[in-house]
Length: 134
Image 1: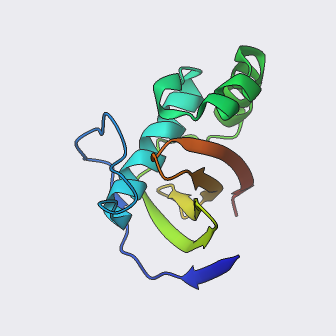
Image 2: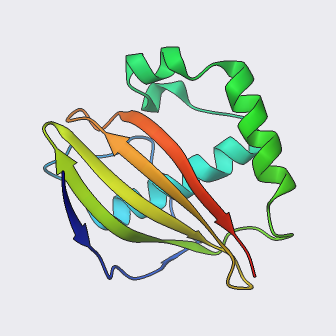
């Protein structure tokens, strides 16, 4: 897998929601930042839009798993809403694109998520890498 470090700018919470991620050719880092923040917010609420998931990942991600993740994220939310995102690394492997995204909180706390997308811009997987506070 090829990884590239990224110095993309922080994305603010005041964004227009995306109803779908653009295709790989049209996708920008800003799209990924907005989409990651939306996904994180939805997951914290336990409300996932399965139309954004690949069929394999949707079948794998059970409602019970969504509930457990939502409970975990709410229990470790640093007492505030996220204020933005930053893509830390990006890479590709075959027809998959991967983005390591940092979710930023007001005190400097952060959560890191690894997103995978297929060529149809559907999520093929999301892994919570860390929830780091001071």
